[in-house]
Length: 88
Image (cartoon, rainbow, N blue to C red; front, side):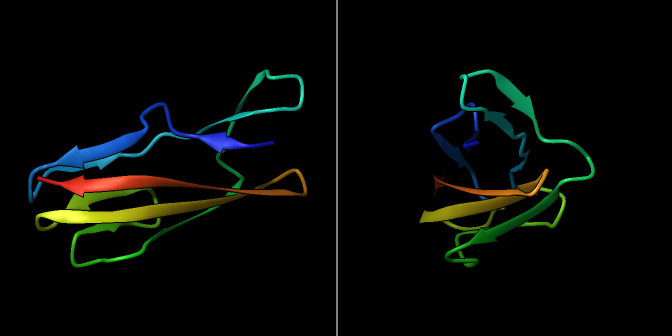
């Protein structure tokens, strides 16, 4: 099942923070919640532009663009999503 963010791009000014929220879609296109017991990993391609904590708090650092990748393991399934990050 693919995971997604409601937003296509996250953007903010240096110092701003956003708490990331994930949802998923199963094969029948039903929304699936990412449960608290799921294994979720976040990574930022360029941490000089933005950082992310293990619990999904995104912080914009300096002007530029990078990508955020999130991997979720739930119910024996692993899925990944990538989204653009822009710091103004």
